[in-house]
Length: 154
Ligand SMILES: [Zn+2]
Image (tube, rainbow, N blue to C red):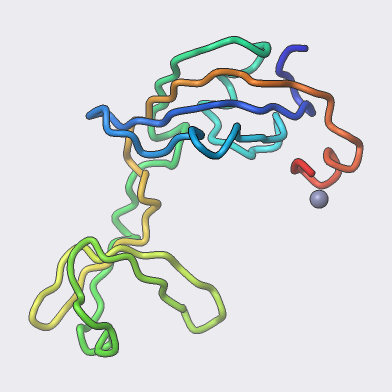
C-alpha cells in the first residue's frame, strides 16, 4: 500500500542539521506514526513521502520554508533583566517558558544576558535551518473514519 492522503504511516527516521549533527531520531523509540495529509509532520517531508511504500528508504533535504519557517526577527525581543529576577543562573542557551499573562505559554531561549536587558528568542529552535532526513517507510494502512475526522492517529 502506497502513502497517500488519509493513510496512517509509520516511518523510521534520522534528522540531521546542515553540519551533520543528529537532531532527532526514531532509533530506540520505534517508528513515528502520523496521518498523511493532516499536517502531522512538516510539509517538505510529507510531500517527499507521498507515493512511497513500506521498505522504501529516502533521503530528503527540506528548506526552512517547508520545515519550521525562517527566523522571525520580531520574535527576538529584549526584556528587562529585572523581569527575570526569579531565575537562577540566567545564561545564553537557557530554555524558558514565558507566560504572556493571558494563559498562553511560550517557549523561549535566552540569547544574550546584559547588565540591564536580556534578549530572548521565541522562534522555533529549528527555524531557519535546512533539515536532512534519512527515512525508511515501516508500514502504511488505511486510517479509520474516526482518525480522519480527528486529524490524528489513534
Ligand atoms: Zn482523536
